[in-house]
Amino acid sequence: MLFFIILLGVVLIVVATAVFKVHPFLALLFSAFFVGIASGMPLLSVVENVNTGFGGLMTSIGLVIVAGTIIGVILEKSGAAFRMAEVVLRVLGDKRPQLAMSVIGYIVSIPVFCDSGYIILTSLKKALAKRAKVTIASMGIALATGLYATHVLVPPTPGPIAAAGNIGAADYLGTIILIGLLVAIPATIVGYFWAVKVGSKIEVEADKEALELNYDEIVKSFGKMPSTFKSFLPIVLPIVLIGIGSIAALLGEESGWINFLKFLGSPSVALLLGVLASFLLLPALNEDTLTNWIGEALKEAAPILLITGAGGAFGTVIKNTGVAEVLQNMDLGALATGALFLLVPFLIAAALKTAQGSSTAALVITSSLIAPLLPQLGVEGAVPLALVVMAIGAGAMTVSHVNDSFFWVVTQYSGMKVTDAYKAMTMATLLMGITTIAVTMLLWVVMV
Image 1: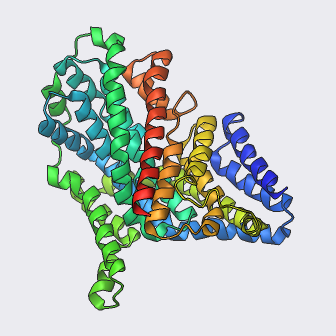
Image 2: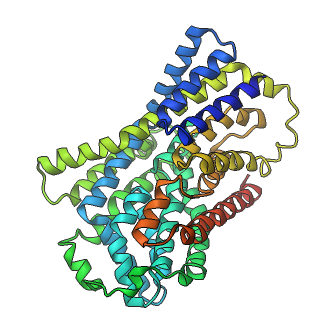
Image 3: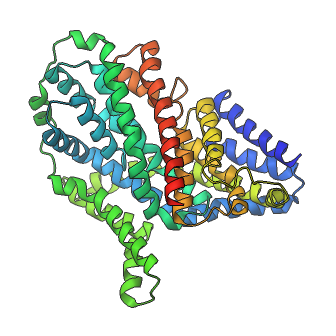
């Protein structure tokens, strides 16, 4: 009965968001109350668990999400994201234009939301397609899949951070970033090959039109862009610091120097230092940049924080319904092999993603659902928990179709018909998800 109530809670979320278009924050919150009350939890305990779950997750990852969003907005508005793309194109040249777009997407989407990244780079994509004499659709799918891979797998993107917080892996963000960057590579490669194979056969109206500006003119039209060093610094600095902090933690020593490295490597401090580094990109230090730009970032972060907090509330209620005790009495031997267990979060996240469209919501809900299962299976520590996040992320990218806002951004800005977008974008995300879970399971066998 308890499992049926939890399943009903998940169905409530999916129906509310997919059918009635209720915001995921309210859907998660109402479902948390429903599961708590229906499971027989004392009413005051339901309220306490909702409050504790919401606040607890904000304590561990709230600042990280806000700082990551600020960095992303500044990279977008200052032209740094465009500069990073231009540098990659210079390095890779014109011989493999789709590969260049995939790599650009892979890098840019670490701090910048995939929707925004795609819109920013649309003019560059079209100009390069004309110059290299390839279809715009193939360039669009290559860019979209590159953006998508790191969006669902690599912090400081909010989805993976929320999943890490829900399963108790907030202290292992350094490991999650490194493994996420690794796992996102084969996913990006699959997207690239699909873009070349299928996207090259899709012709859109813009392929027949003359481009108003060529590639060099589009780069110049963007105005004075920041230097390469300044553009990459806000992304590279936090990742390096978190990595150093993770290494310092492994040393296990307690000294002033080690503690200082741990301080610098704590995700909140590392991301805030990344924010300071992003200030070097500001065209001027005035109200427009320091207040309006930051204010816009906070507006973008707000719904993500609320969804993440509501997911934490939902997860805490589930944990305290007594489901852990029920799981303890069950024979979980078939799942205890680990690699097979990873299929459970993958399939749950894939079902949620396909049903309601949001990768972030799929990551949040799935991580909340499986969190009570992990201690019973002995899944703990940096690498195992990081691979669980990867498995959830693999599901959260399977598949992007008409209920996903990113699907429409790619379709509209590429000029593809919906039927063509299904062949190119939807199938690409399906293959990426399958590839990602396969790689994740292989890493489990090798590393755990």
